[in-house]
Figure 1 (tube, rainbow, N blue to C red):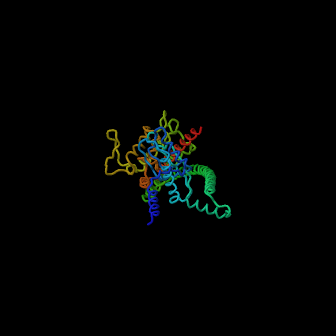
Figure 2 (figure 1 turned 120 degrees about the vertical axis):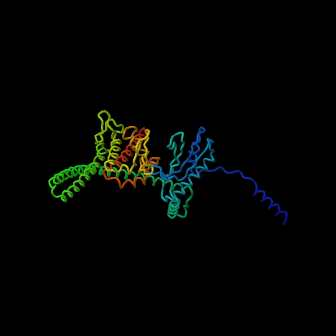
Figure 3 (figure 1 turned 90 degrees about the vertical axis):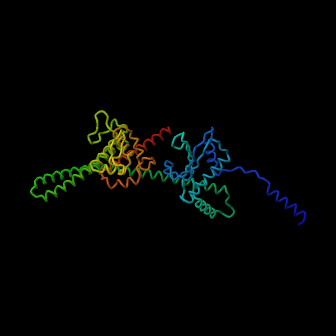
Length: 406
């Protein structure tokens, strides 16, 4: 090997091992990186950041795609914020490409337990699958002339144009959907009122027929077989009439209130229809429905199966036989009892709402086990109670949103 070749090889080796300064990280989404860096302002920091799918125009959080937890208040630098933003954006893009496979809105949300259970800051992202973008880019390239090649800025501009079109389409779609939903709701409300009126009329007719059957029973005492058949028939009609009246009784509070929530405080609401109303302070609609539900469970003989054989010892609700619990837990039963007696506010029922994620929420398994035991009239009280609490929470959310805009 010549001297020149040796010198060249030595020079290449020195250049190979020469240390390099790390390059500054360039965030793919500068706004997201800037938002992340601002979370650490004034020596504060979030306890965790989550990437979630956004549903119903961002009002509902869907599947959690990724969660990143933090410890301490060390301030993030620009490079660390850029690296974190690129990581979160990559996870969301992968979920959009592999799982959703269609345009999807994502939220990057920050939590801090000292500021409450709700996220105190959020950043929205609108992503499209990469396959969709590649297909759109190829379609545009085929339409272009050979003298007008596509560059990165042109593709980025068309990508933004597609996003604007998608937003316009979603806006039109949501507006149309809301209009259709309002029309269906109005028609359903009118149909429900007519159905309740027909039900009350039918129940009166059934009562009349039942009383006639009882009179015929008294007149046919000499024929025991005829008496037995008539008695069973009368009992069946009376049972159906009672269940129908339970259904109407549990539907009427919501209908008479015009679906506007009624009285939540319990100062002007009607009596529960069981003789338990007082002259000085009437019960709220939630108390009426809870009272109806528990009384109907006792009348139909399913209370022990639903809640177990309970007794109060030393001021505490306990099972008589621990080996025979009910379908619902003692804590769930206690909340219903306390709300009925007015010892807990109606908002305490939110802890029982299915799908609330709270420890005492009613599970799908409990609903499946209890459904065969409940008649239509008894179950209607529980359904109306769930619907009433959901309407109240939606009204509060809308009122808070209106105040926030004001």
